[in-house]
Image (cartoon, rainbow, N blue to C red):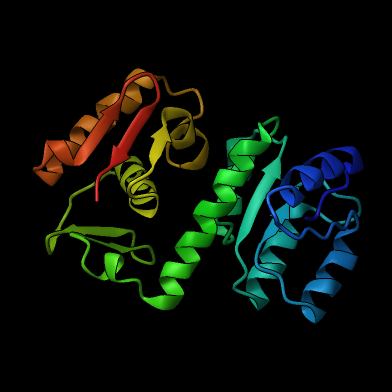
Length: 216
């Protein structure tokens, strides 16, 4: 965890240690980068507002040299920061303040995605969806879907969390092509268009009062 708010780092560490996770914390980004060169870590939780070096620079330097998962944990709410962080290779963006249980869920979700990539999990191989993040294309049953940037972002996010409930807030905060001021109704409209383009409306289940779940 690269975090200069030591009080927050202590709270998060206590919570995650109780879940049998081993946490190492650095408040100095330069020391953190040095440790990452010498030691092996499963995941990095990265703040953006750090002393001496912006967290976006830290993210870029980590990603240039390692494939370790990165979750941004930041109070900076500018959509440009979120988009830049994701473009630089961050795997998730969690805006402060948040419940530590949400951080736990994000950690498990990101690690599952990396495990699937590394092992070639059969559920991914046999999925009706084929996600090509490099070209920002999604195929359903080998048919290329004609999606807007926002629709692509929503469906790609759902595919990466397939089988899990996703809140509308998750979509608003984690997809750069969606304006942070977007309403729940506008998200519902975009999901409706995605359902129509897939041609299987039942595949995306509405979870009342929360959001959606892409069924396996």
